Length: 135
Image 1 (cartoon, rainbow, N blue to C red):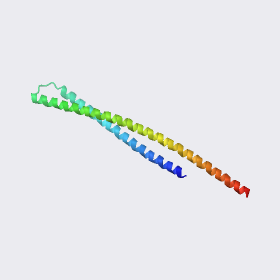
Image 2 (tube, rainbow, N blue to C red; image 1 turned 30 degrees about the vertical axis):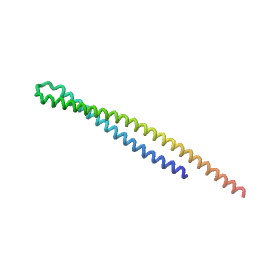
Image 3 (tube, one colour; image 1 turned 60 degrees about the horizontal axis):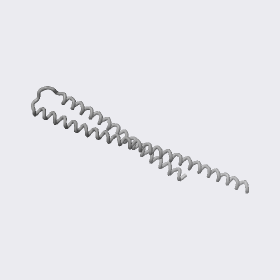
Image 4 (tube, rainbow, N blue to C red; image 1 turned 45 degrees about the vertical axis):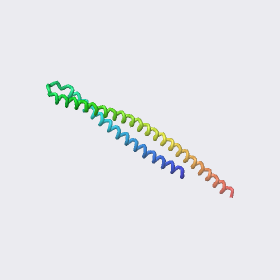
């Protein structure tokens, strides 16, 4: 029974780790959505600024060009963040699948251990019964 309890505790620990990883994956999904939203907004700002055709002063033109350049830099940063988050999602998914596999192995070990204990108990009962009969 001691081994069964240990295996049960290992299963609980692995389930907690799995839940933590699933929570982390959900957080990553939320951040990906935020990044997409920000990227779309930045793209819209860049389109608006680059499509302006009205006459402007040279200073205003330079300021707009500088703004567009900064927006493009921010878009690049957001795209890099999205690439990083995609890799994090893959790593989290792999961690979840590894954790599920480990939980399955532990469950199998637990069943085998229980079967072993039941077989041992059955043998003990038979021995007791045979001992009683011999008396």
